Length: 109
Image 1: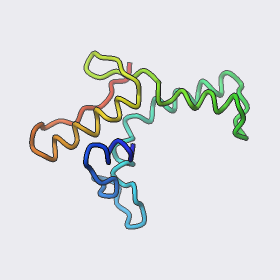
Image 2: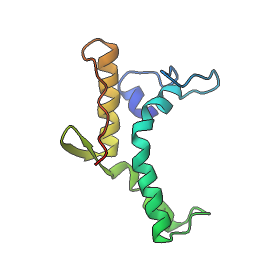
Image 3: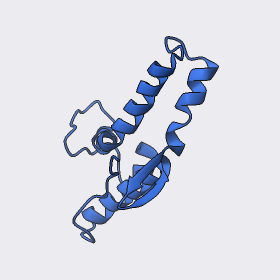
């Protein structure tokens, strides 16, 4: 998330709701919240499949590496999560610039 924010010209330190002088990623913490259910879903799959999770092993790594490529939905379109992060942060930058009034977030389907 922080990388996407920086790529969109934003500072991940300056949060909207998260504020802590010792948190260098307050804005990243704010903007990642709508993406959390996708990761939660993957964690639930890990538990249901019985993958050992107390230590980082090859099976767990393989499952976690699926996160950036997970399909997410934006306004009727499907894209990988990493592309979706960029869409959201770019829309936030356009909001700050006054070019649009709404941040684009993924839709849970």
